Amino acid sequence: ELKVEQNPLFLSMQEGKNYTIYCNYSTTSDRLYWYRQDPGKSLESLFVLLSNGAVKQEGRLMASLDTKARLSTLHITAAVHDLSATYFCAAADNAGGTSYGKLTFGQGTILTVHP
Amino acid sequence: EAQVTQNPRYLITVTGKKLTVTCSQNMNHEYMSWYRQDPGLGLRQIYYSMNVEVTDKGDVPEGYKVSRKEKRNFPLILESPSPNQTSLYFCASSLQAYSYEQYFGPGTRLTVT
Image (tube, rainbow over all chains, first blue to last red; front, side):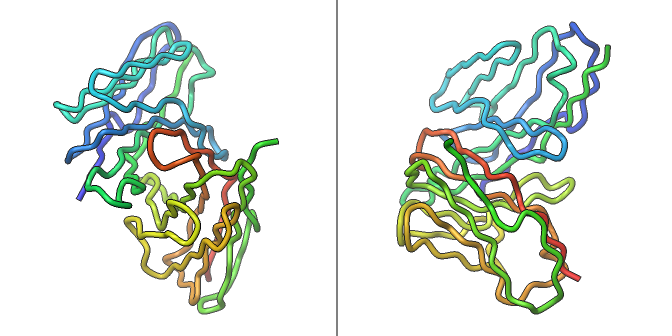
C-alpha cells in the first residue's frame, strides 16, 4: 500500500527566506504531483513530475523528483506573502493495470509567510 | 470556460437519506476522480474512472457508489449516509490518468446529522 508523508506539516517563514518541503512515499511510483490550496478554495495543480531527476520551476517554486530515494521536494525561493497556502504532494500507484489511476496524497503542509 | 462543476456546493442531510453529488466537466477528459478532504488527513481518493464505464476503488470507497455512463459526468452516490461521511468532497478530471494535471471542482461541503 502506497503511503505518502510530507514534512514539515506546518511552516512559518519570513519573507525573503528559502525553504524546502519534503514528500516521501513508501513504494515505487513514477508520477508525483504537487498542488496548492488557498484557504476555503479548491486545489490548483502546480507540477507534474514523471521521471527520476525531473525538475520543474514556476516563479519562486521549484519541484524535483528522486525516484530512487522515493522523495520529491518543493523548494521555495525568496518567499513572499502570496505563497501562503497549503501545499499537497500526491503519488500515483505503479502496480499496473487500471491502478495507475489511483492517487495517494500527503497530509499537506500549511505554509505561512510573514513580513 | 474549461471547468469542473459540482452540485450542490453545500448540503446538510440526515442519516440514511440517499443523496447524489453531481460532477461534470466540459474538457473532454477521460479521467475523473472523487476525493474527500478531512482536517489532518489530507485528501483521500474515493473512486476514480479511467474512462466511460471503467471505474475503480480508491483508498476509501466504503459507503459510496459511482457511475460513469458518459464522459462528462461522474456522480457520487451515498446510498445511506452516516455522520462519518461528513466531509468536504472534491471532484477532479484530467485528460488521461497518466502524466496530466488534474483540474479540481469547487468542492461540496456535506454534513450528515
